Image (cartoon, rainbow, N blue to C red; front, side):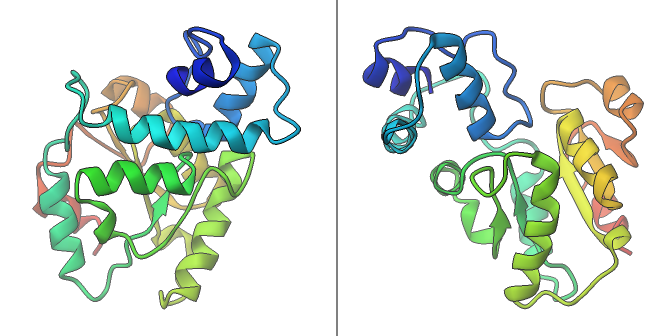
Length: 204
């Protein structure tokens, strides 16, 4: 995002120090642009998106300390894909094209049938209803909100689940430790997703 913003508007480090974890791309961009005094009207929003996607494709293959598929994720998604009674969908603050680029790079996009993305709503919590509607349109059966698991690694993921009346599974592989996630009201907190059998028990 920093590279794309500098390419277009000549501002270096526009997003330095801005919290990103769990937020929508749109909200992050608006905060960075406001701080830099850049008007996102007159096509600048779309210009940034297009440039960001191009820069993202370039950046993903670069080595970095926090890049890669986290423990247990691939195996868990494969186990879920083998079950007819679970419908996997995305709910993410990433815009749809950004999410696709990231997940395809790690060969994970194929596991999700649909989703709600950060370009669909300004308020992260609004994405739950969008995700539910899209899942139903893609063939998911109607379910109670309490039967939906929202899996994430930030306090904002927990807040989204709580606001919707869903259950939250918080994973301490992101910016928040176990104590912080528990204090935020997560229903279940795990260190990572390496214990596939234990996670699948939550679906019973």
